[in-house]
Image (cartoon, rainbow, N blue to C red):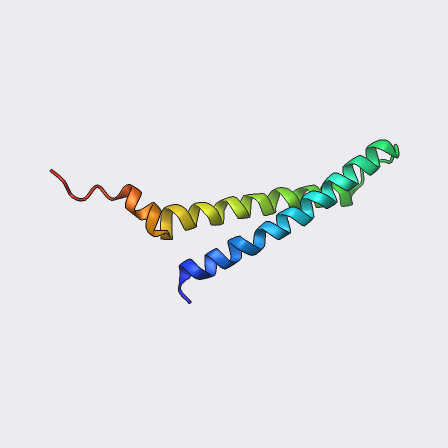
Length: 82
């Protein structure tokens, strides 16, 4: 496996982490809002984990497309035309 395949695998599995954390964060937000509960440190931790996983997903996608993907590399290839 080369770096492209490893990052593609990580990018593929990170989407599930993002999805699970989004569902948990939304559930905690609405249950706290409708249940008139106080905002806890755990709620902040879930939100920070969700945002961090979104950043990781974006970073992996940008590295894959602009750094390692043959499609992204062709987009920046000017063909040395003069």
